[in-house]
Amino acid sequence: MGVLWWVRLIRWSIVLFGGWILVLNVSPVCAAPLFQQYIADSDDFVDTDSNYELSDNSSGYYSNAQELELARIESRLERSGWVSRGIIQLAPEKKMAGKRPVGVPVDELDRMLRVVPNGTPLLEYRRISSTFGQRLHPVQKKIRAHNGIDFSVRIGTPVHSTANGIVITAARSSSSGYGKYVVIRHAQGFTTLYAHLNEVEVLPGEFVSKGDLIGKSGNTGKSTGPHLHYEVKYLDKMLDPQRFVEWSSENYLAIFSLETDVPWNVLRKKSTSLSVVEQERRPATNI
Image (cartoon, rainbow, N blue to C red; front, top):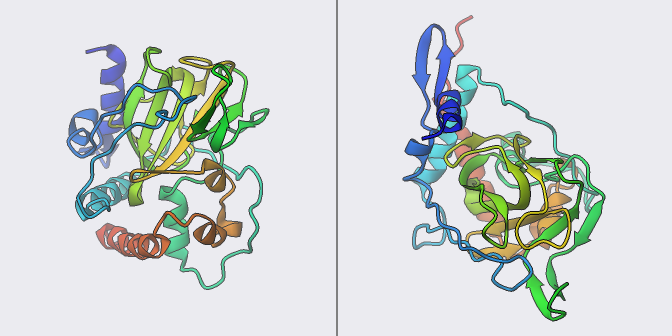
């Protein structure tokens, strides 16, 4: 077991609080049973590029136990005074058509934009060089499905998590088509993937907040040039990441009509109920 593993385990599992040691349930050992850690070797230039599976309950939604576990982790971190090691505010790539939400509960807006991917995973990049959907394979010269978007970016550019979640895969080997990559499982049934990294800065089982550094961009795996391949998935359905990249509080309602493969009404209700659970778990403040 390497030194880095132990450093990360201590860093994320132990918080000194009021002279007592509080052990958080976010170490790789504790988190592994909750989140299945399987991802197939794949190539983001072919139609099998997103062949990673996350087994959930047969109803098609994440179990309440898993949702509540994420809520408990966030609540414990907040109560302990924990501060993210590199949190930033991720801005949308551009503004989607829409207006500031009217009549949206504050708790819903706050939680949805923390736990559902939104904004760019990069603070700076040249351009989006390849979009979601069918495209001409750059090598085979055949039309293939591209299940993510590609950001053209310099090697070594910091890559950030686009929502709170738990790292389920942190591949430091370049043997797969994705090269070095990270997969993060978020609440509400979403996962994100960040591929072709030069460096991976997280370990499986780590809890990350929106904006946390998870790696640095590169050119590993089956890549024709330096870029970040970014995917957003809801259960077993691949989604257009650009809609989430452009999503923010200013156009909060717009994505609900644009992305019809997600049962937003159900998720919004669940998000509000989880916010109530978080509030109830917070101890009263003595004045």
